[in-house]
Amino acid sequence: MRQAFPFLVLLFGTFAANGQSPKEKFIKYGLQVDRAKTAAAHGRHQQAMAIYDSAFALVPFMAYDYFDAVLNALAAGRDDKANDLLIQATENGFKVESRYDPALQEFLLSERSMPYLNMRDYMKERWLAHADTTMIRKLTKVGSWTILLEDDNGALSYSTDPAAFERLLSLARERGWPTPLNVGSAFYMTQNLLLEQLDNYPDNPRWQQVLPYIRSAMDRGALPPDYLAPFQDMENIKQGKPMAYGILLSYYREDPSKWYVVDHASLEKNRRSVGLGSIEDFLFRYDLDPSLMRYAEP
Image 1 (tube, rainbow, N blue to C red):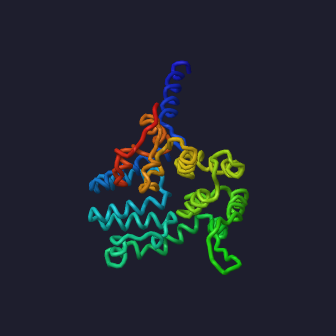
Image 2 (cartoon, rainbow, N blue to C red):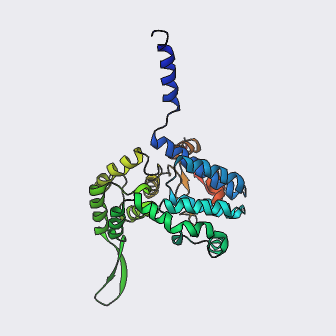
Image 3 (cartoon, rainbow, N blue to C red):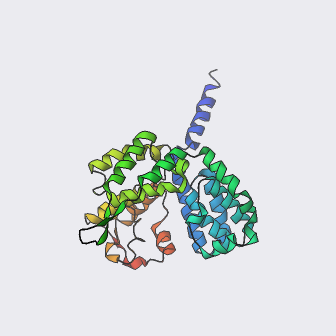
């Protein structure tokens, strides 16, 4: 038994070293998707397809990311791959009709897409069989973060609907935070609502109410690790501080005065920690001028 003990220690240590937490696996997934998008932007579509395959083998349920993978397959002339990806995407809650692209539209209206179209209804059924349909229905009832108001003179204007946040919080308390695993691409609705409704991240008392649900979902690998990055960057911008992730650079593409980020080394470290690739690749994909960037001192 004494002779076997060192071997068992070594074997256990190997498993521990090779093991990844669900969150770490999601971070690796994000980095691979980032690489695939960059390869596609450089016109290296075959390479991008291989990277997407590796990414979806790690995390198969990020339906939203299949859209770019499908476009890449079409650009590579791989109709067979585009059909396979659309089938996988539909099984994971992606609504093809929610995204428009001329090349995809042409494909869907042609006989080239028959392998997907023949499987579409079946894959929708498979999605609904494992999705949280109750949560999807209640998330829809959360509604928009804006409402249309009419003043005494009959003029119409949009205003924030504070009740939408309360409905979302009530849903989280009842069923947990909406994630791509249980509601598909609809989970992005929550991010949009929070961006419009909440400020002072993360100290706002309302933020404190929802953060435990969000972080729990991230820790168990059900929510993208960069989910909270836009809120941190937005708060930093409001306070005149450098963005920690640079994730809002494309959002402010017409306002370079906001292209202020932490020092380059910290920026790269921060981005990798949440599954985002290099800032240089990001700038290339969005055709942003690197010379307009301002880096803070280390």
